[in-house]
Image (tube, rainbow, N blue to C red; front, side, top):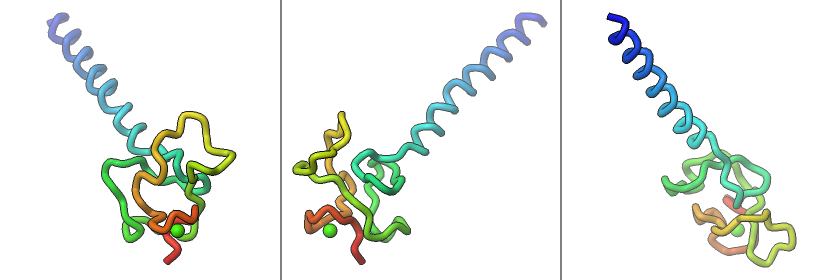
Length: 88
Ligand SMILES: [Ca+2]
């Protein structure tokens, strides 16, 4: 009986451990977008999937690109590469 309870507690702890990081990942903000919080890809989002408009998108030529940013505009919000996402 004690063993059963112990294994039940262990499995509950394991499911909490497995669930929490997934929630944290889902609420992440992609560092490629300076002023808005947009989850990283995948899934690939389009302007129709978000409410933000005319936000700044880091370009490789910017002097203030965050350290560690490797993928610029992963969602492709800035199709004309002028550093502003979802103009329309
Ligand atoms: Ca643009």
